[in-house]
View: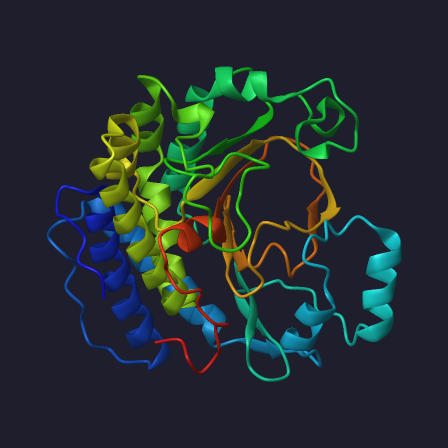
Length: 350
């Protein structure tokens, strides 16, 4: 367990995450023991944590096991697969044919044949007032979202204008932006150990300047909840990510990177990156930068935790829809020497 400095936003996140974990354990065990909330979290956060813990416990109590070997599937999956190459997806389907289909209508955990956790599905995990905070924060990012759309080819689907639709509310701006207090720019992520004279991490362009801390602070409660969910979903990844955050913060201080230090101090998530997505249609795809053994967490009204590389996913939606996707870049864990965690297992959630 890594000690988090008390002046770091992550300190409160870790306290709240342990509160959620204790509530989750009691709910799963059907133990009526009363868990006192920490004095360091406010009432809205406490209520949101209690609600999240109940939904997590409901999902854990509803496991769905598939006739699929997650490890063998990952071995067959191309490392840089985008999920959009038909021949590769057809080959995977031939090697690993679909079994019975499952329509998820209540909180559930999807397992492979060996008990490895593939996906957590948590409908209504985000309380309505937290959703309202997310909407207000997204409205505040309107200028960044507006600049995010490109006039490029539809193959660059993440920012292609044709995949976005106008808002029912004039205040919401369609778009997709990435935010990170510390990351390697696209195309500069090292594979294997980074060379001593190679690229080093920097603050994402969306958080550079005086407005960065304000954006980060507006996301803190949702960041806390996504992190608390990961504490239950994948404990080893959670603690590895806490350690990575602390190491990156020390690295930034040692090199006098004041902007990065400030962003890391206010960053309340164990995930080192986030994507804010507003009113975008997503084709079926995979995220090659996600580690197959890890989890990303996508939050709207529902919350979904899975590896964006392992699980091919997409969205078709009309009307207003805001999604905050929280993810971990393995290149940052590699940069500071944090070992990569193994798969999460159903009986191993502790």
